[in-house]
Image (cartoon, rainbow, N blue to C red; front, side):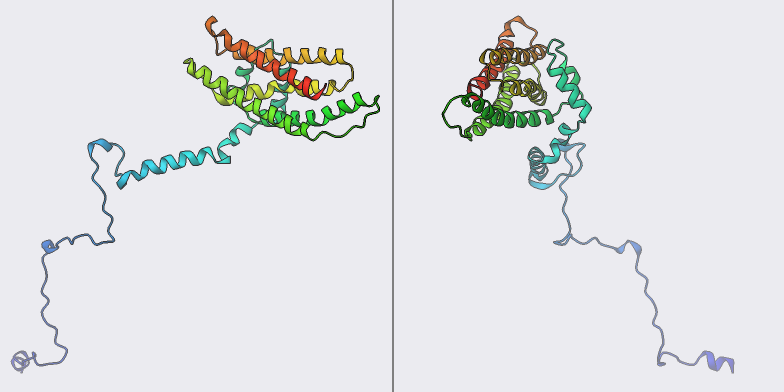
Length: 265
C-alpha cells in the first residue's frame, strides 16, 4: 500500500512546482551608464587636494561671481557700521584734539563708515541752512530783498561728498604706489571724522562779523588739517614723502576756506 503511493506519477498534477535553478553570484555584469548617470572627470595631479572638479572651469566662474556679488551687496558693509554712541563720541572728541595723532590705533580693530556718511550729510545740511541764514543776516540792514538760495544745497553736496570720497581715495592710491601698505576704509574713516570740526565752525560762522568769521575759519582749518596730517604721518616715515603730509594739510585747509568764501561771504 505504501509503495503504490510512492510510485504514483505527479508530473501531470496542477500546481506542481518546477525545480529552481540557482545562478552563480559572480555572474553579474555591470551595465554601461545611462544618459542620466553623472560622469565625473578624474582627479589628476593638477587638482590634487581639491577633489573632483566641474567641467569647463565652472567653479572659478562661480567664485568670481560671488566675489562681485559681495562687492555690491549691502550685507558686506554691515561690519563697518557696527558702532555704538560711546565709540562714535570718543572718535569725535579725538578729531578735536589732533596733537595726539593716535586715531589709527583707536580705529584699527573697528574702522567705520558711519562717521563718514553721517558727518558728511550733516555738514551738507548745515552749510545749506546756516549759509542762507548768514546771507539773510548780512542783507537785513540793506533794502535789498532776500531769497533762499537753493544752489547752496547742490554746491554743498558736490563739494563735501566729492571731497570726502575722492581725496582719501587719491591718497590711498598714492601711498600704495609708493610701496606702503594702506587701508582705504581707514582713510575714509579718518577724513570723515576730520569734517566734524567744520560742522561746529559752521554754526559759529553765522555771526555777521567778518573778522570773527576769519578767525573761526583759520582755527577750524588748522585743527582739521592737523588732524589729518598728523595721523597720516604713521604711514609716512621717510622725509622724502613729507610732501604727502603737506598736500593733505593744504587740501583740508583749502576746503575750509572754500566753505567760508562760498557760504559765508
